[in-house]
Length: 201
Length: 97
Image (cartoon, rainbow over all chains, first blue to last red; front, side, top):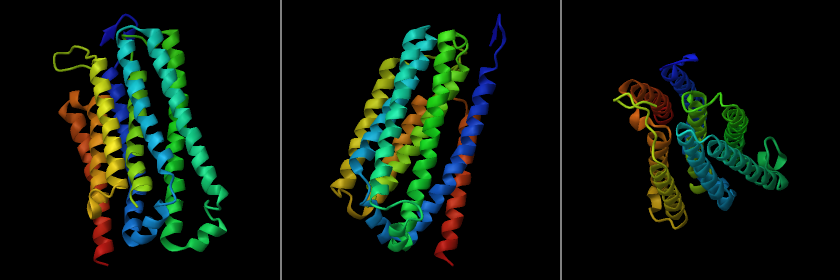
């Protein structure tokens, strides 16, 4: 696409983002691999440990992330139609949902920490075997996922700034689209974390 | 993104909302399957299948994979195959150790 402001290689930018997402798939994939091996070896322990999870909060958080994905997708359609304010508003709603997800996650973690379940805690070490591994994986995987949500919120905040400054506009959407791809990817990771930690008991 | 005719495609709001509604229905379904033990011993498989359908919907529509060319789809398949290979080989080791 060639414009008066110079050449914008939207296809190249998108491809670069996808390559990054491939590395992210393998990054999280390694942890999913660990989870499946340990689940296979300690099926009963994982079953018991998963009963500790708050299924209501997990389900609400899944609904929040799915809805936030809708919002960022709609914000891209909006900017393509030239609706700058509506687009930034949808980006703001996405950030608010990301923050809500993290706040709920905070309460989940605190509820566990309060009953002595946190990495290397005496309670956890006494549980032994599979349960210790389950909660270790829980903290590592939801923690790294939460970090991705946090990074996503910060990046979307920058996109809001660019959208209002109109450096993101209907002819130059690549940065917002790549942000959307990243956000949807983080959503997909959660789509798998939810059944593995909350449902499979 | 561009479709084959080179036009920038704007996916209709209605289509996105429809995908989102299906995702919420699938969320309810996966919760029901798990809580009511609907599939009994196949509940793990059921939950992961539903998760994969959800991930597929997000990939196809929200991430526009449906409208991408073969190259990108092939690269994604290659990545997922690599991950599948890692998991498969590791399990082979665990099973036959």
